[in-house]
Length: 103
Image 1 (cartoon, helix red, strand yellow):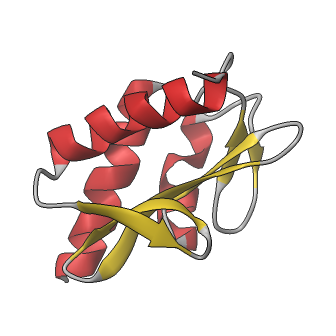
Image 2 (tube, one colour; image 1 turned 135 degrees about the vertical axis):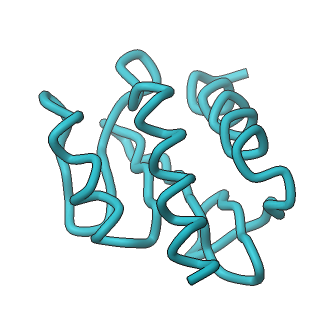
């Protein structure tokens, strides 16, 4: 199992712990979870990092002050499996995105 696979499994546990109804699949070509047919959270593996995407610039902005040392993009956070996004921040990202989806 690669580091990315282990991180993916860990993120899966967090996502399903927050939103048990989330469906796993692929969105925008990356492993992702959907809620009510809308993208909830996705992960992409790049050569030098892992991208964590809540599919919402507002969610990234809401947790950005808790991610010192991470590279933030408009729609995601870059990390590595060895220096991952903290679990409490991932949990908050899933919670905030789910609230957006539910309106």
